[in-house]
Each structure stands twice: as C-alpha cells, then as structure tokens.
Amino acid sequence: SIILGNSTGSHGIYYLRDGGISLNTGGVSSVDVGRSGLGQFYHINGKHQSSNVVIARELNASGSLYRMTDGELNISGQLLVGVRGQGSFDQNGGTVDANVLEIGVQSGSAGSNYHLSGGNAFNHDPLVDGLFTDGKLDTSFMRLGAGDSASFSQTGGLSITNQLAIHDGAITLNGGLFIANEISNHSGHGVIN
Image 1 (cartoon, helix red, strand yellow):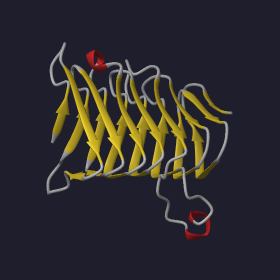
Image 2 (cartoon, one colour):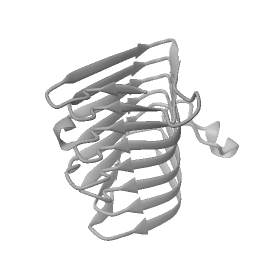
Image 3 (cartoon, one colour):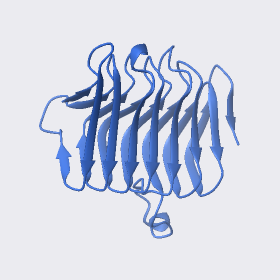
Image 4 (cartoon, one colour):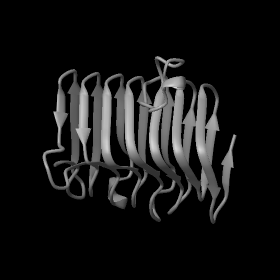
C-alpha cells in the first residue's frame, strides 16, 4: 500500500512518470491519496495498477488530488474520490478503468469532483472503442453524491458506465460522449447538463 498524508498536518506527494507500479500482489492493496493529511498523486504516462484508490479519506485530507496526464490507471476494486473530505481527480489523457467510481462518498466530502478532458478511460465495446483514441473512462458502477454534493465534468472523450446512480450533485457535459446503460436518481438533487 501507498499512503500519502497519513497523519493530521502531514503532506505527501507521489510522482509517477513513465514506468509503472503494481499493487495487486494479493490481498487488499490500495493507494490512499490523503488519509488524515494532504495527499497529491501526479501520474504522467506510465501504468498504475491497484486494487483501490482512495482520495481524501478523512476530513483533514480535504484538498487532496490525483492528477493524471496520459498513461494507464487500472483499478480492480474502487476509485473513491472524497470519502469524508473533499477530493479531486483530474484526468487529462490516459486510460482509466475502474470497477467502481464513487464521488462524494460520505458526509464531509462536499465539493468532491472528477474532471475528464481528453484521456483514455478504457471501454469494452469494440464498436465504440475505435471512435475515440483520446478521452475514455470505463466503470461498471458510478455513484455521485451519496454522502455529500459532488460533481463530474467532461469536456471531451468518452465515458462509459454500466450503471449510474446520482444522489446529490451534477454531471456536466461540455464535449465528448457519455454512455450509461442504466441511470437512477436517488435521494438528493441530481442533475445532468
């Protein structure tokens, strides 16, 4: 596991440039970007493989972020953006493939966000895959604002999810293509623009 900002008042930074890291070596392996302190993960090219990635696990970790430019991110479990603190994921290029994506997981995570501009978030549909060479996001399940108001914005590329659950927050599309096989609106105020 990698933990950035493990304790209150601490600040951890990780740079992945080219190369790769793999934390799927058995058992639960994860990357915490801001556990109880501030965390920043900068991913430029390269390949990152992990069971789980958690951004802003606790309230004191608010402001933690994962910034990705090109490369690959493969998560077999969950990508949690803002658990009890405000977290951000900024994808500009590259491939993101996560089984579950949750933004604004619990109370205290207000303002958590995911932004996709370009990038490759891998999808499993060969009919669509060939249309986009830059800007893809693939998840089996995506939940927005279950714990606090959160947002997802896209300015290009392709996002695909099997199931989208919106509780409290907004999805803003200013370019590209967003495909969801099933959309459900739960408690709260959910908007797709």
